[in-house]
Amino acid sequence: MDGPYARELAVAISAIQHAVKISSRVIASKNKGIVEKDDHSPVTVADLAIQALLTATIHSAFPDDLFVGEESAEQLRASPTLLDAVWGLLSDLDIADSVARIPASKDKLCSMLDWAGTGQPSAGRYWIFDPIDGTKAFIRGENYAVNVCLMTGPGQTLSAVGIPLLAPDAVAPINNDTTSASGSIMFATRGHGTFIRPLDGPADTPARRLPRRTADDTTQLTAVTCVEGTDSAVPGLNVKIAARLGIAYPGNDLLAWVLRWAVLGLGAADATFWVYRKRTRYGKIWDHAGAMLLFEEAGGKITDVHGKVIDIFAGRAMSSNFGFVAALEGAHARVLSAVQDAVREEGLLELLV
Image (cartoon, rainbow, N blue to C red; front, side, top):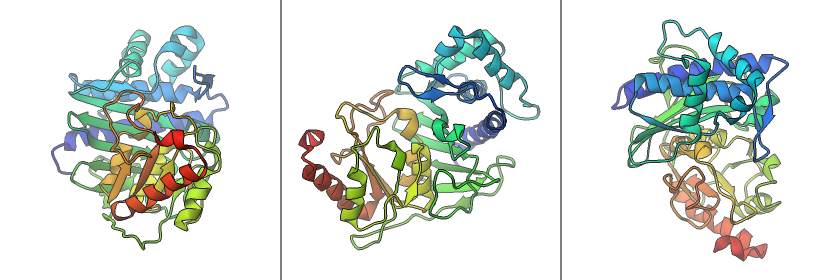
């Protein structure tokens, strides 16, 4: 594993491997420690323990780097029982002979969670974490992902995504319940391509480079979208967009956004589109940063519904952009046009402002 960020990638891979040990243990347990956040989305003991593990591991290796993550210590400070459960998951983790680290105490656990949970995008080096993307699917024992991204000023530099239930040789269609006993790690660094390797094994385990794909106006596309996500998207619109493009819907059905980007990078899909039902709804940086690089390095182009380049530095909420349109670069204009035409046909012109 060569390249200018080989050490960062090795540390990220080790952290992801230990994160999956935590998530696998929680999956096997009857009590997943589920609590509800202010936005009514679920969070489990695994989400909290994994973010603390990722932060502690990266901080140990790169002490000057900063963090942005989905979770904070708010729930732990309000519930000693939940704090004990998260601490127990971390304390039982065997990190001998690895670069992985855990916080030194419960107080440090809470502090490290807040480093990321209150962190903001900045101009220097910082890491973005989504400890479990697809928490609802995770609770059901379906596909989920662990997302790690390194930002270094100009943008997404490194992406490492753990996919515990997706085999490295998985083929379309890939759905929430398309699971395997063997998992994968996908990774990319800017300008060096996208790779996939088995989840287990040392950092230098051989990885397969995924092809950089091309398309034109006549290419038959395969989509990846989310059937159950209509609470945030315009109801029925994705079906109409697919019909305009002459492609099957949903093609691949995945709840987690990180997984959608990974499936695009893998080559099991060529396009995705998502129009939020409200103009004030935005993506979250941990659902997209890093994972988008997996597709970009495989030949993808990603914009918002207006055709604007995605602004990774807008904040924790990606408020400079509205929705997502992604496709192989040569087909992107066709997909964007289909999305915008479908929005107009629905009379939702306010979404294009």
